[in-house]
Image (cartoon, rainbow, N blue to C red; front, side, top):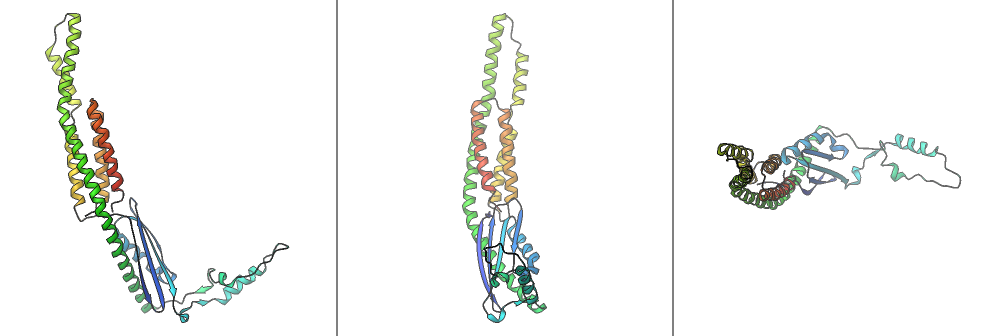
Length: 294
């Protein structure tokens, strides 16, 4: 079953007096692209998190954010008083324009780089934090994938319906194709006969047959129709498969359009040209839908 690339999920955990909240969003993207924002004490796990996302999501633009909030006053970060004093000293040296007043907001200064220092975690704490992040990421990914699969079911129905419509148009083109040659043969014979009647010459049957054979070869679209049917069958098979099919479907949609363009350029028939326009519209719809398949 195909899977959508769009989804959202969140998960929470509390560890050692700190509440961690994770949000993950995924959007359409041709390849895999991850944006990961972790608290300072979890940043050593960023590479591992990205590897997990890549393995489980396949492709898409993924934004993962983890926020930490201390629930215990005893867990407050240490303040580097030397750095804080340096900020205050520099701010105090700033000249204030006449008639203006300024105050130093200590709460704002605490967010300045280097003022608040998170104690370095030892090996045991790092292992515990790694286990914590593994669990919360796994929970959020399970929810995200569930949402993407749910949307993928709807997407699959739309794609299969479009594939069925493509097949119907191909049937109509295939039914019309033999008539094109017959009509060309009739029109050519009538024109040649009219010209010969005026000049009182005899019709060269072999020459006429050669001309018809050349036209038949030039406007033969049987191979293109066969490939269109094959591509549609592969589309349906991939939609019913369990593998990540987005890239393959994208490629097949391009191949469908290429075959439709070839048919349009080969056929010198207004009805087939009309069907080709209809066919290309359906293929464009398929291409749009496939952009959201993981």
